[in-house]
Image 1 (cartoon, helix red, strand yellow):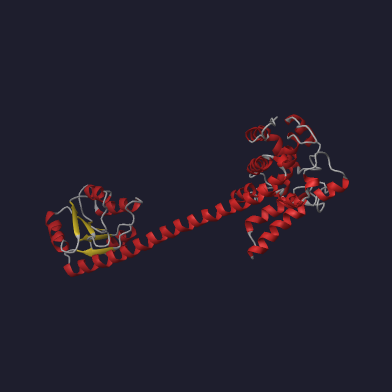
Image 2 (cartoon, rainbow, N blue to C red):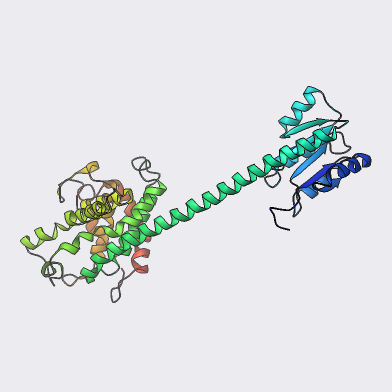
Length: 369
């Protein structure tokens, strides 16, 4: 039978057979009636495959009274939404209040008035149908919001990776540099989440944004001339000055993308910070602005450690790869000058993780040390 046309199911619970027959005769023309002679049987039916839409429950029953049955129904998430109407000769105000406190929706005194029973059953079934509809609608909306949120996040990922790939295709020497630095930044951020200096900033959402944004740190290289970007040797002073502009070019490229969209895109804020400021140094000797200390965005301070470490351990046409220990020794000189001391200290504690990432995403023909 179609759900929309089936008869509602009423469970009548009473230890007196005559009362069960009376209620069954009264309700059976309009509803599917199930009966239970005691509380235990009522709970079993309520937890069955086809739960009742409403329960008419006697209070005074041996072994387990109606109050206890109602308490157990309302304590169970699978039965909590089934409306319970007490049918009882206990008609004192205190009795009714106790029933309502347990979660009953109504209280009908015996001897019953058939029109009143039918009217109240109809009223509470109508209310339940409305509540079920709203509950199903809310569940659908929550599912739809979750689905659309996943779509937006997927679009963010595709956008970032597409932009990052532009820089990677311009500079083939970097290989898996983008992947490695992405994971270096992630492990650093997760390790520092409980640090008193960083805990307020490094929320799970912010760490997720860091991970997604890290691949854009060198996006500005798309604007560097090939004669400089692909030069098989060290850059001279003038060439290096041009190379340094990749930080500004990267930030500006993301800003232009936002302007073309016509809106500010919050998830790209972190990407702008990283691309623009990852070459800044803790002592103010970096570029492009010569920022120092806490003035450097945390995202850029994390990337600085990740970027330098990876540059040291990787082979380039103008240099051989350093071993892990050689890279660590060189970076030690930058603690408090190039690097935020606490971020550098986290790197030192995470050396095994950095080595594992370097090995997992090693470039072809380039051994991770």
